[in-house]
Image (cartoon, rainbow over all chains, first blue to last red; front, side, top):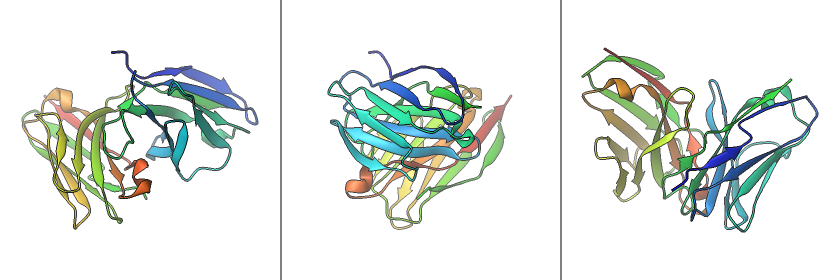
Length: 114
Length: 112
C-alpha cells in the first residue's frame, strides 16, 4: 500500500505570496490532518478533514485554509505569506478521525519564506 | 491545549531504560505516541484510549492515567534505533476529539 504523499517537497516563496500544498492520503483513508512543525514548537495542529468536512481547526490565522476533495485528497493554502510561516508542513491520514486511530504521516513540505 | 512533555531531552547508553511523560491540563479521550527521526516523518508507536484499550507495537509499553490526565512511555533495554524525538499527542473527548494536539517533543539519544 502506498504511503501518504505530499507535493511539492520543497518550496521557496516570497513574503506576501500565497502557496498551495497537496496531500494524498493512504488509499481508503478518509481523514486528513495538517500540522505545522517548527524547531522548538513541535507539531502544531492546523486542521482536520473527514469526508470533505473540516471537523476542527487549530489556533492559526484565517490566512491558513484547506479543503478536502471527494477522493480524500487534501490541499492547504496559505495566503499573504509571512516570514514566520517558514516551517515543515506535515499531513497525516487515518482511516477514521484522528482521536481514535493511528495517523500515518507524509514526508512533509518544507516551506521557506524569504 | 498543547500537552507538556518531560524530560525535554535524555541521553542513554544502549541497554538502559527511559521514561517519557506527557501531561495535559484538560480531560483526555486518547493519548498517542509517535517517534520522529531526523529528516523523517513521525511514525506511530501507540494509542491509549480512555477505558484502557491500547493499540500499538508489541515492544513499546505505555500507561494512561485518565484521572491525572497523564501518560508515560516506557523504553526498556534501549537500542541505538530508539534514538529520535518522541511526541505525545492528546485528543479531548467529544466532537473536538478530531483535533490531535502534540507536545513539543522529547529528544532521545542512545549511545553505544
